[in-house]
Length: 271
Image (cartoon, rainbow, N blue to C red; front, top):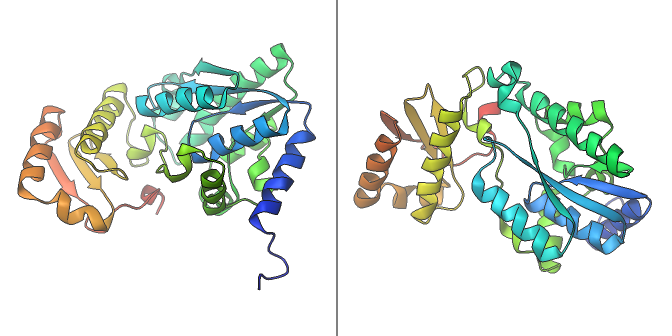
């Protein structure tokens, strides 16, 4: 028996639809990930007038942009790309703990400009209920601009969103989290275009070897710290695989290649 205060997952989805139907028109900050794709599907089901806008910059992996394009086309919804320049902001590039605030502040400023010019009443993001317990400076930017988070309002957690996404036939239901490439740099380390490209190329190479959930942390521009789930550590350390990784990572400019023996931990630079 479920506790009396726990709403069944299907009721949460219905609550989400009711929240969205109460909005006149919507502009969604769309990343193409699990949460925003689920919200985009809900927006389509709600029938509200809407557009999905994806930010494009050096901090976004090319594979994420491709996924956003494909999901918007899959759902048949209005879609647009928006170039952002957070790396040009010295406060962002210095990589302080509030880095995400500066990125989202620029993004939301531009999204509200589009919304105002084109008559969209509300700007939404894809934050979910679990995000309330994590370190999220971007939430402060959302509050500053008046961005709404209907997944939080409906009480939907990440696991529930994955479950509902699967039942709705969304191919993103099992997609690993993919935060921006800036999250691979320890706070206080300068973020550069070259550093971002190096991390993206390194992670793309690991994915080409069959690893799916991973991070390559960039320490001092010459040390790469690889994180994969503990179940993948043995495969990562196979002689042939190690040799391939060492060769490619040195081609990319890393002098030292290390493996985190604790395994993959999303957001571990916040620890």
